[in-house]
Image 1 (tube, one colour):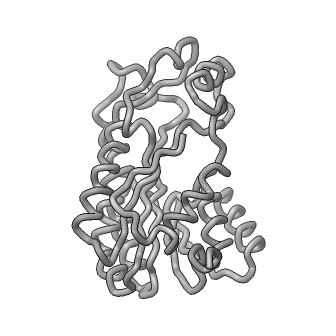
Image 2: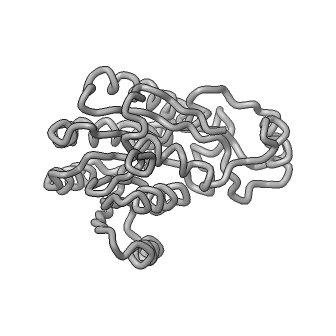
Length: 259
């Protein structure tokens, strides 16, 4: 009975930001549950290689892939037009988000050096694109019933940053990122009330994921956690499996903090 609750056999899922570290783990989770998956991310050779590895790892699943830059409205609209052709779509995981360029110009920078351009760019990718995708694909999801949308937010959509853990590093916490992720949490609640009961809508807010941050940052961060460690991508398998399946058939409008 438990296995049946978590099964996604015969389901078709869409995962945006598919080839990032968390995106790949989401794909593996859904494919392991039996879902066929539509993948979308930026077009580059590295992502093409990742796609080949995914298809090799899950030979029994169907994978459809589209490359799109979510900062460009034209590409988003073309993607949505293509996605409307998939009449069996019943799961969407909105994982795509703007993390920022490594040079930090206007975004990953001290507050007074953060620019309006970087603010708008972040919200375009991390919030506006999700609004557009969900709005345009809602009719498809409603027809399939018992559909599920999962929005990937962040603890920084819930809490203000503790600047102490950033001291002595070149890391920052952009205002645009926090605003986009907070907006996504409330959009989740709004959508749950608006497009339910046929579609459940939930958010996941990950805590800090270990990704080769400076040792000083990691040490300060770990001190603040009850489990005395940062997260890994594997820590999100369970909650993705839960929210995408019938195991969460009476859960909607929630923001599940995994930290």
